[in-house]
Length: 306
Image: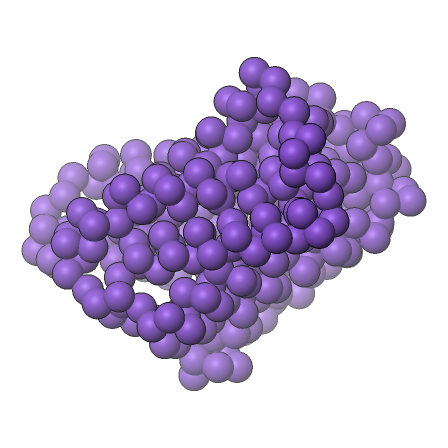
């Protein structure tokens, strides 16, 4: 979108779209848990991205005309599919078989911190003292969440990382790390390329890799499709993936960074509240304290002064 058009777009529209992103991305964590009640993780993730990739295949030609940008190089969308989609979400789905949705959202929210680190190491940016403080606060919060031995596990109905399942919580941290690697490559080598084509190709390639892993480790033919699982899968694919990525990349070009930063620290809090409301764990005071630390640190790192 031209800069003039972005400037004349009502602020209410930008605010509404950011609110949609926050609500959608805070609810996807619970939707994943719904799917995992009846489906193995890799198979479930493969179906999600196959549907999302098909939706993007329908939308990409029109979106590419609006972007007026060339297709990304093959190696870039292959890398994006392998990192941001296949590996990152494969790890996430496996971890969420044990880690409650709210805690998963909080742990994954270190992604903007990893991207800030990547910007310093590989993109030539510098951090202020306030941002270094944010790192310390956030990672202290992560440590508190991981150390919450009272938070129980999936089978006990208690929240948090879970005593005896701390390994799954640590495994989950690999998901945002891998996504940060892929996103850094996109930021460094994908500037000016079509984000619609990048997402379409990446989703479809990621779905293929997840399907291959599922046939290797699971039995995808045994997938169960209850009404709730079907609705959750379609929601994840169409709303939580195709729609949200489309909105996000559009806003990335036109919305002020101070507004767009809301999608970094609002969803984890909403996800925790939703998980508590639907009974996906019962986060104790230590889990909430850790969440507050993580979110406060993220605010210090990503919030721009205006």
